Image (cartoon, rainbow, N blue to C red; front, side):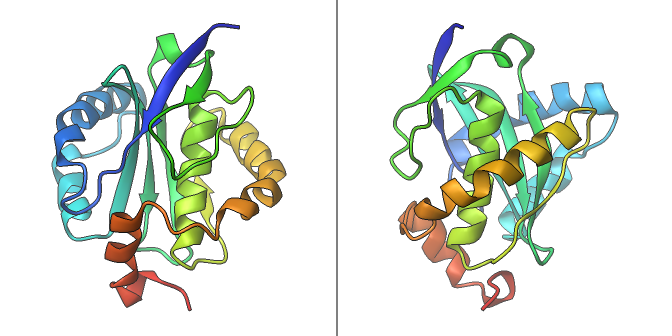
Length: 175
């Protein structure tokens, strides 16, 4: 199976603003598929520190993303989207030191892992998922089989800037 190199970035408050345009373009494609979503509202949620977006980039071009809703407790991940041409390719992480490389993961799998690990790193015991497509049960089942392995990565304090920012918001952190 063909491999593709990706890196994961974070959009949250003022972090990752340079990736907003690429996220917006992907979000508009996603909205056409599901008929839901509101990009301007999401920018407000990011700025108010209620949600974050983790985009996947391939050669600096955004190719997918996952959203993590921090307003709900426990936090919820969902609104997962990967460009059609990248969906079946095996991904290799680069320039993402805050997440361990896994063997034979696809982009959607790295996105789920990243959202789950970040949600746990800020102190939440549980991260829920509300995927909105026909693959949701498969994704949820897969995530449940991986969580024990990912738990080994929860103790790292990376990405520092993001985690410091979230930890200063006690209403988002479950103690």
